View 1 (cartoon, rainbow, N blue to C red):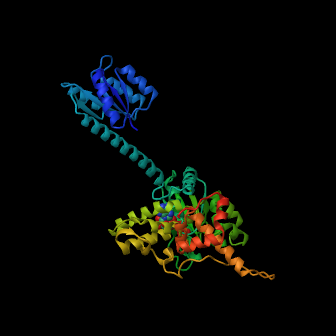
View 2 (view 1 turned 90 degrees about the vertical axis):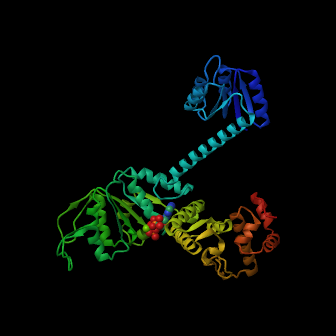
View 3 (view 1 turned 120 degrees about the horizontal axis):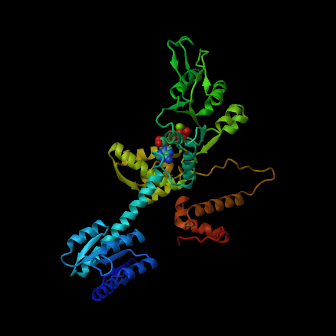
Length: 472
Ligand SMILES: Nc1ncnc2c1ncn2[C@@H]1O[C@H](COP(=O)(O)OP(=O)(O)OP(=O)(O)O)[C@@H](O)[C@H]1O
Ligand SMILES: [Mg+2]
């Protein structure tokens, strides 16, 4: 309930307003002078103050100023007698939201208060949105507000301020390149180049000369002296993507750059010294690569000073709606489409799909849907079968790779039952113990699921976990 304070030295007006505003469901306080008004403000939050401009002790404008200092969110509305319009204007300048001239109509009072409160609500909403936007888009186009991404943002912010080598780890499509850019563009090197080299895309023989340059005649076809990417990145950053694919020989040369910031171009004995921040990325398990002697241990330690692990999309499903929105907007704009969003059931599908291709897969899927659908809401039918699992027999099944039949034999019936129970519990858990939703996930009729739950005594298992199953 909004709290309105009426400040007027005329008792009749105070009382009439109090009665009327109470009927309008406001909490009302009254004050006959400034002292009484400030006393109310000391004890209680006031949303709207109706202030008579001409008061005995202190004039209305002064009261407004002091009230705003006490409670900056308070909305003053001025009441003036006939002939004091100029001071009403002055009051507006002092921050009054509106003014009413005596004698006023009570309905006008109600409508001004209502507008004022709505206005403040919008302002507050805008402020919250702005804060959110600021946080979400703090790093250019990286969308995400999950705890996992917040941790990534925090780390990026911290390392960006240093010259440390950064190693970005994460599955394909998780946004490693975006994060690499964020590191560079949030660093003091932001006005210098960010040079990107995809170590997997360039044949091994060429990669060395690409990175370090070569002199004329260094090898057949080297018709000119060409600087390397490390030279181009001087004072800036170099992003070495897919570093796990770099050959052993080049790893040695890179290690030296990391240690001494210097190298020799191919075919040259002249040492180049550079000042380059190295950002490396890989979707490989470098620990394992080291154990398997595919990656030099010393280089790994040099690179792994500050690892930033970008979690797969399935581990931060709360970002899915936000990313979906972001991509819909992007593709609407690019293709002149009018996609309005994703229908509820389809969003549920997006939230439960495993996204092996991570954000890139989501982005591609939205692009495809936007192009095909053009208008309106994206529905489950519009999603690729792989994601919606709509065509029966085509839907996902659980991998049974780890299963084995021991020499001593196994009860098929019991194993299958256990397996079924397990899946049902997982589905219930995933849907917040909602039978309707769980049935949909398992592509069962609700009645079939209910029957199975009863038959397998699952309700009892659940009660032990302290949950309630809904959807009856
Ligand atoms: N958090 C995010 N917000 C917005 N777009 C994102 C986000 N994460 C990834 N993307 C988009 O998804 C696509 C894949 O991201 P990116 O190329 O950075 O992934 P990657 O980890 O480098 O993948 P790969 O290992 O396959 O090279 C890009 O188009 C990128 O713009
Ligand atoms: Mg990449």
